[in-house]
Image 1 (cartoon, rainbow, N blue to C red):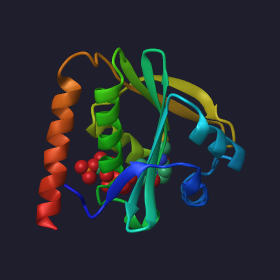
Image 2 (cartoon, rainbow, N blue to C red):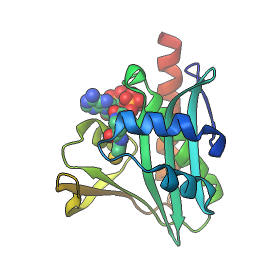
Image 3 (cartoon, rainbow, N blue to C red):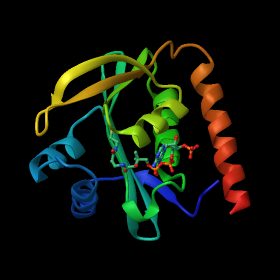
Image 4 (cartoon, protein in one colour):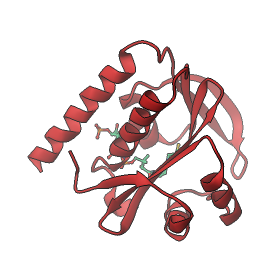
Length: 174
Ligand SMILES: CC(C)(COP(=O)(O)OP(=O)(O)OC[C@H]1O[C@@H](n2cnc3c(N)ncnc32)[C@H](O)[C@@H]1OP(=O)(O)O)[C@@H](O)C(=O)NCCC(=O)NCCS
């Protein structure tokens, strides 16, 4: 399965492209120093989706005790709604499922108004569990907290297999 994409770990070598995509995707993009820190800290996974040499998406997350927290995900505007976000989240969750023994939950925050992102997360089995009022300081918007729990069960692996199959079929239909 490829979607014509290559997903691989990103590093400081990709800093300029990551920042450009971040600035184009979020009202509060990370600073250069935060990106540098995140890309060099332990217990992080940062993946990029590449079409040839072009970075068209990224996803990041960090391990904190028994929780894996998705910190960011974005697809380049010109490539949205074609499976790139799903492909990135699939790869990230497969890495978490395979590498991180003892993880109990995967969590994230999402803007209350961000329906595309909530749709992406629901597709993978994330469910809303709480609200952080005024979490986004620039405009005081609330964050919905979403999680996948009970990772020790078979649900996550089964759901990832289903989504992988769906993405493969979508590629065959293109
Ligand atoms: C959220 C985002 C990463 C989705 O990326 P994408 O590559 O377009 O996602 P996909 O094409 O894989 O779509 C995955 C699912 O998301 C949902 N979705 C995506 N775009 C949507 C839209 N415009 N409206 C409603 N749902 C949408 C759907 O459930 C879709 O599943 P389906 O195709 O099986 O119906 C992208 O919209 C983005 O970069 N947004 C700006 C940054 C951002 O808000 N990141 C999330 C921070 S919490």
